[in-house]
Amino acid sequence: MTLLAAHDVSVTYRRRGGQPVAALEGVSLGIDPGEFVVAVGASGCGKTTLLKLLAGFLEPDQGAVTLAGKALAGPGRERGVVFQDDALFPWLSVRRNVEFGPRLAGLSAAERQASCGRMLALVGLAEFAEHKIWELSGGMRQRVGLARALANEPAILLMDEPLGALDALTREKMQELLIEVWARTRQSVFLITHSVEEAVFLASRIVVLSPRPGRITAEFPCRFATRLLAGESSRAIKSDPAFIALREQVLAAVLRGATA
Amino acid sequence: MKERALAAAEVALPPLCTDGASAATPALPAGADPAPVRRSRRTPAGWLSLNALRLATILALLTLWWAASALQLVPPLFLPPPAAVARQAATAWSDGFVDATLLQHILASLGRVFAALALALVTAIPAGIAIGLSPVARGILDPIIEFLRPIPPLAYLPLIVIWCGIGELTKVLIILIAVFAPVAIATAAGVAAVPPDRVDAARALGASRAQVIRLVILPNALPAILTGIRIGLGVGWSTLVAAELVAATRGLGFMIQSAAQFLRTDIVVMGIFVVALVAITLEGLVRLAERIFVPWHGKL
Image 1 (cartoon, helix red, strand yellow):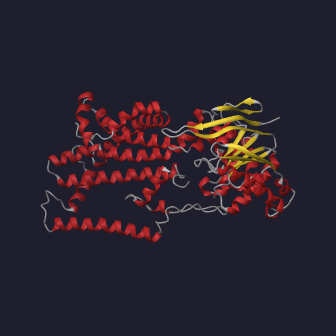
Image 2 (cartoon, each protein chain N blue to C red):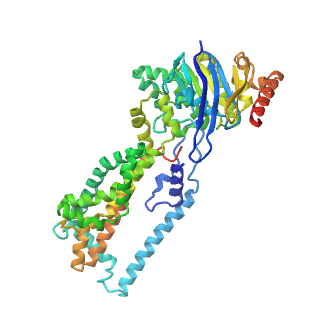
Image 3 (tube, one colour):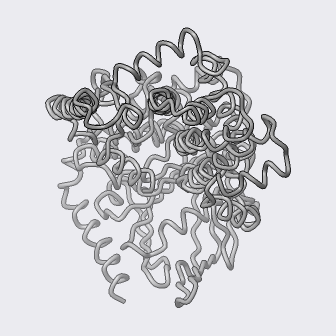
């Protein structure tokens, strides 16, 4: 059964004195349990709008978003969200950031501590629990954001260009971490990126969005992540001819949409 | 972005009372990448020469003052010598002036300013939060604040006296009116400047609207609120002399007024110095509070 789905959704932004902009038009997308869906497209193709709809931050002008068959009512703890600029709370320590969701859910201190410890270990920050947010690098902050979203044990993770602001080396490590976390937690993931290579590397399914109006123009099944889990290095995977061929195919689809 | 612009402005114009601690970089844990150092201009050498210049300016002015009065270039009635002013400070401290010691005058003035500040905190901060959160509240409160903000305290002083008499209430109200606007405006700006992603993050983690306000918007606005308090304290303190024109029997403003009536210029000048010293101390205390309560400010 489909976990999270957008049914024929449209969103139009109306700016005062300007032409209305169709951010999304007639987009349908279903995410099944355990899937790693990556949306890729040029900037302005409505990727972030689609993620905001799925997260419940935004309501569609037309169409509907459903979670396990039921219509969404705003954001909820079963959908964890990771933001491009970490969106952490700098007045709280790393631990208190990660415990934010469990605390709201009324978990006991012992339960919170256990889950926080687990999540920080998962993202490799076990010894940074008591650190301040501003003492961490960008990559570490992004991992705290991931741990914070995971601490609520959501059914699905929604990630808005989580690696967009990171340097190339950190980005590569974070890609591997995301695949490991996905495999270990067996969570569904919806991630948006503008990097085609990242999409091909991470996804179990790629959806290509085209701008103005934002529409899904192509879908590709994908399975390179399983090869990383089988022990192959990410450099080897990314230089594999099969990887390069799919990357070019997806890139062509992105470019076709961008110029159409 | 607004926060960053503010921080940048503070770097460009260091306040007079900045001390060494704010220039020190926080210790980093092993393994953590250092956050970008924004105050790179304040190298130890640069900081030293800046403070040396400040000290030199103060010493030069004092020397000039001393020379002018020692050579009798200006009659002591207009410019009392530094030694006379210092002597008056000591006398006022031990024996008092017009029925109260210097400390009692200071405490009377501080009491009024802090009473006004306390009232401002319980009125202006909620008002600022309401303005920042709700367009309706903004529509209602904006004209009131924009009307009050630019009026000099001496202009509304007579009206407050007619309304509230010549008691302590009037003095505190005059200061409160001056303090209200900066605190409310700074709070509103801090509340409105909360990054939407932080609010969304809290909502996605299960926070209700009330929890978002309490757990995200308020802590996020705390640096701005403290800035508002700092500005408000400055404004409140400078309104003091006006407030103490009204039938006061104690307070620094009253002390200066009385001394002026007896042409005791040495006490007037001493009073001015005490007012300035207290203002600098208050500013330093709020900056200390900023370092303690909002250590993250300007670092993210």
